[in-house]
Length: 150
Image (cartoon, rainbow, N blue to C red):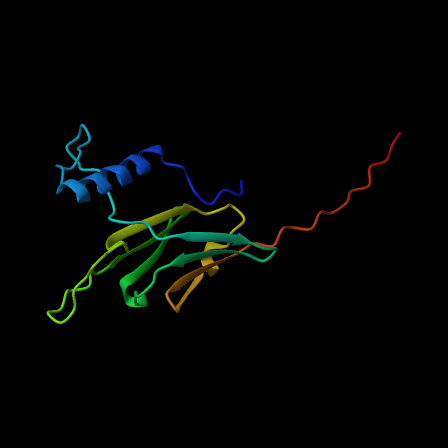
């Protein structure tokens, strides 16, 4: 199984709710039957996932963020990238005419393929791009077995 993401149909609904909430000034959070609120994020960074014969590479665009503002964790075969981009404060000498970039907290999660070596995961952050390297476990070489035909 070489899938990196698990599709969650409710995530798209949460994103639509977040956009309406921002536009209309806020809705009360939705609740599960057990009284726990659904975890929502303010935005979702764009991600590329690449694969070659040696590794999986996840690239996340996080412009104007610092590596201290981003957290990468691996738990039970799920890779999580979380963080928060702070809103720029309007200065008296500057006036914003348009704000299109997203701000606030985010979380991206990915199911890690079975052939990834999670013990050797590495990440680097440069020029607003987070790169998470997941090396592959070398595939065992098949040992041919000679079968005698009687």
